[in-house]
Picture (cartoon, rainbow, N blue to C red):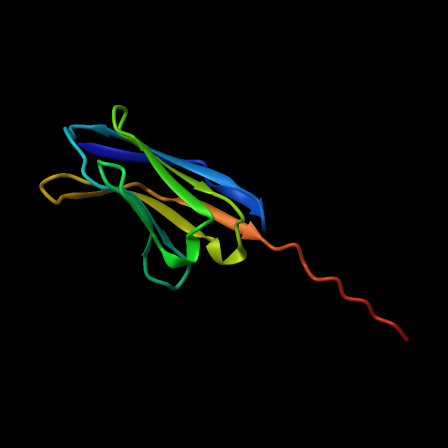
Length: 125
C-alpha cells in the first residue's frame, strides 16, 4: 500500500504564513510529479502547485508569487510554503503523487483556514 500523509495545516490570520508537508511511504518505488490541490466547500478540487522529478514547477495563477512548492526526492516528500495568505485560500489541501505509470495517490487532506482581520465599524449619533 501507498500512503501520503500531510501535515502543517491550521488556522492563520490573513497575511500570515503556513508550511504544508507531505510524506509518501509504502510500496512506491518512484514518483514523477508531486503536487498540492485544494478544495473549498461546494467547489471542485483545483490544482495549487505541482513539481516534477526534475523540479520544474507550475502554479495556479491565484497563488503565484505567494506560494512555493519544493520537494525532497530522496525522502519522497513535498512541501508547500504559503505566504501572504488570504481568506480565499481557505480550503482542504490535498497532496498528490503520480508514478511513472500514471497512477495517482492522494493524501487524506489537511484543513487550512484563513481568517480576516475584520473591518472597523464606527457608529455615531
